[in-house]
Length: 206
Image (cartoon, rainbow, N blue to C red; front, side, top):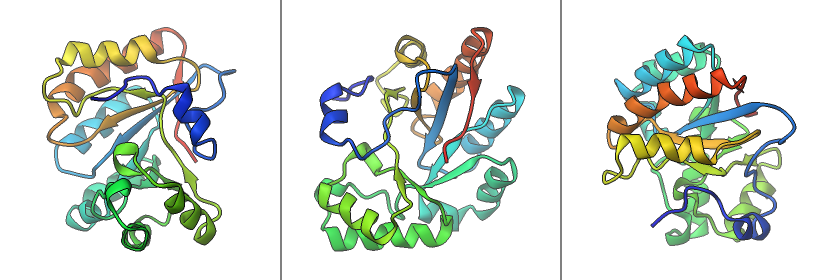
């Protein structure tokens, strides 16, 4: 069970996290979790380039070590890089010490001030510790979840999730992963085409 649109209650409970950007401008923030990996990340980069779109990639440290050349391609394309922990840990199920160590291990690879907790699940104590040790870190959530990770979701429904719930300043989550590939191959170019026609631009975080 997941919510496509982040509820106001969560935003109220975690006010120190970034859920969206200013609603004043026609700018959308595409984000991609769990890469870099072969094929899917390359597809995303190629598709973004065709629309002169910038985005933010929240990378798993272990994947960066496995696929350093793909990671370099993300950086060379001048997209933003975010920390997504080294092993995609779920904060609610992980002790604070282990979680912070895993964050730090990924930080050695990324050197970024952007962090997204995997699954969007992080304890307040973990937030406090990250902020204490890395005060410039912006912890980024989202306000629109594409659902591309859901193998039971049709590509068409994935597209509609984004189109129906995106507005000025929205932070949208896609996944450059094998699991999401069928839906992202269909939805991403159509999202870019749809919002480009409406006069939106696509920017990176950070």
